[in-house]
Image 1 (cartoon, rainbow, N blue to C red):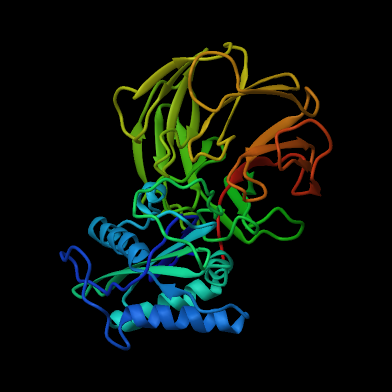
Image 2: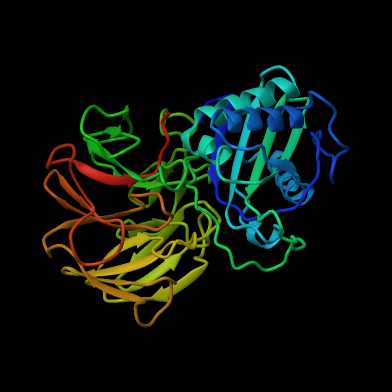
Length: 418
């Protein structure tokens, strides 16, 4: 959920401990003094537990170890003015939990710290994934709040953990064999989140939150009908948007709803290159890779200049799909030859990690995280019918849906238009 006043994202996290932190102003570092009643921290804690009580859940206890991680991350977001997830939570959080989750958000311009905190809580409650995290089967919470009074902007982080009542919690940085509950970038829980499809007809794009019959949630005109279209999360906000390619110049927009506003461009590669999009280094931002035959020139930032990595893979005649096949947060390549897919979980020369036959050689195939479990899988397209699989395996599709028209140009896209 995004607007000028606020933006929300959600993702899984592993943490633990017990205590307090408070709101801080820009430039302050470290843990703030204990919060007074009616502080932003108290508002978020109280309203979170009120919401849990409404759904039959017991209150979560404020945990200082978890809060230290939450606070540090909120301060970092404020300092950089960037809403993002903490990519190192698994090494920072105390161990001992069985499941964990994270909500992050910002709010600006609501008239003071408490008002911004209340707006963040309002939006978390209204967002399916954030709300599911707040009413999850957790015992502990960490809260971090960073507030800049000069701009009336607040960044907030909630980290949740489930711990056995009798457990001795391990210190920060200890290893844990537990696996976090995955929550997708757009703020919905793994169970609820999925990639969707965007349809292009000429220069008009039709976008929906989910793959369903009926009118699109968003229709927007952008660029020219002759443009090559790329789709990616260019700024790491958890929302995909479009880029237009004309020759070797690529025009990017970070807004899906108003793509003509605030565009920027970069000249990259050659007009004859094939361009692939992926998060090659796991930083949450999609960038570009140039393909020339069987050689891939991979860049970890959108900029002119040399590639960060060059690798030979497959054959020049192969069709290529990009996806996060193993859910590690990094995109890699899959080679398609007819109806056989050779899937690699790292960008390197050598044998594939998995080989599977799926669909027909004549099928069009899309890659996406269709069930929100953090792993990309395959969808076969035949005309306007989509055969969606939630695991990379031979056999029947998990879902079959008719969508759009047979002549549509179709892209996998990750959005939350609520």
